[in-house]
Image (cartoon, rainbow, N blue to C red; front, top):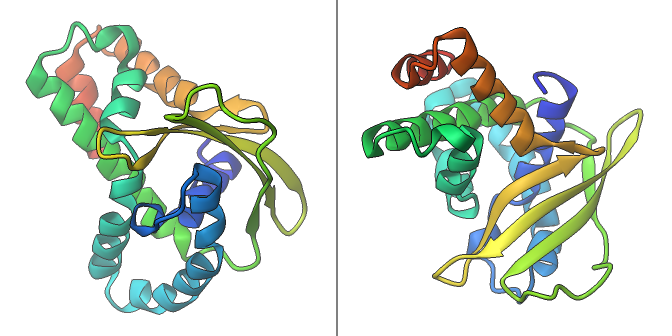
Length: 201
């Protein structure tokens, strides 16, 4: 997760940076429409990262945040501990999770050169119009991986990412395992676990 899986995760997110600003009708069309734009962004923003990393992170965060439901993902990561947490703790963790992912994303984006994602045609029509599974192929310099990202339409009719699967690995479950491991090692002290997550930014 910290190496290859993380890089693949970041690549997927870069493919979808401007998802929320498009007017396509389906999740697949959103993904396909972003390809050329994202390639251009990766090339042009690399220099900004070198000259002004804080501004680069801010730009990426503003573009990336609208297409991911961090609250839903953070709630799933907390799992059974979500009910035990207070509203303040839930909000703190959601923000810590969001910040950690965006910071890592911004730093990793500049590493991409020739990697690409191919969005595959839908295998079948979803039984629920507010849910979609988008199947992809991730091409690196040495290998090809299959992946899926799960999306849903929120109350504003915007597509949001809520989970990603890469080569059979459930990345949402991976994050949850990390959270559970921290809880176990820190006597189920949610405040301490959140603090450790925050300090890892």
